[in-house]
Picture 1 (spheres, helix red, strand yellow):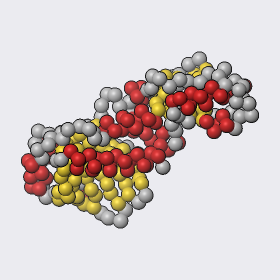
Picture 2: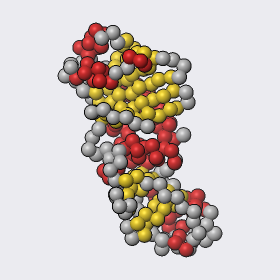
Picture 3: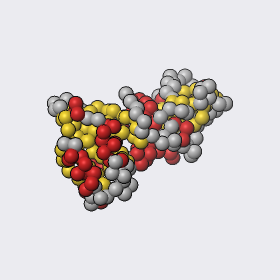
Picture 4: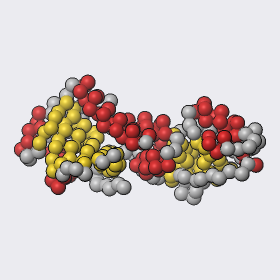
Length: 250
């Protein structure tokens, strides 16, 4: 599930009994075609199962796409290969039960994350609109890009707000931050089915947060905490980031 406003795409995942929202700032390079790996090869039907396993070992993946000319045939897993009777025979001569998950070149990174996490894939093929094979995105590359989305290494400060879910307004929060000549780098919402309150973590591109905090207080927001020291911010953001990584790896 995702929703949009003028600046953010919202990624919502549920882990255990809590709901997490990740507000990803929209950028031109957050679509599938810009996330394609240029090093991981595809399989041809003339390749053997043994060759496929060797490539999977080299590139640390458990799946590789089979391509005929420019047509995506299906996704082969290491388990499929282990089930073959003759791994030294060309895979095109084997009876395979392939499945064909893919994303199209213009899909947002959220759609890529959703499909990769739902199907537990290590690669996802990318097709052009006419269903021709364009390339693939690896899980490891996707995780590195998610790290950039969370702005863990970006300079700035962190403010954690606590508020009733009914009072939550992204537009008002954005106006407060931008009204103080600052910008939200990433935004994380944590909610629970057992409480009507939510916890909102903002990564902001300024280290001097006093004016922003004062404005939030004037609007009757509860400041649960703020973090200016690098080690504090890194610990907090990595905690948020790691909760999302655990979700992807579940």
